[in-house]
Length: 45
Image (cartoon, rainbow, N blue to C red; front, top):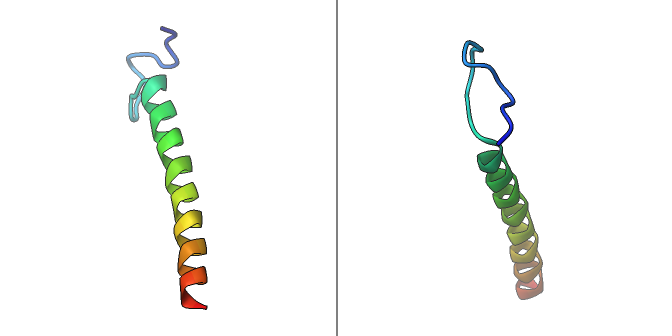
């Protein structure tokens, strides 16, 4: 795996796989909110 940071660098050290999973999770969460919003709007009318 590629190293995107050095050991002496300050800050949070997470692997690219974790960043990918968090990004996919965020996209799925936003898509779910869109679906829930549409269903709630249809149910309200």
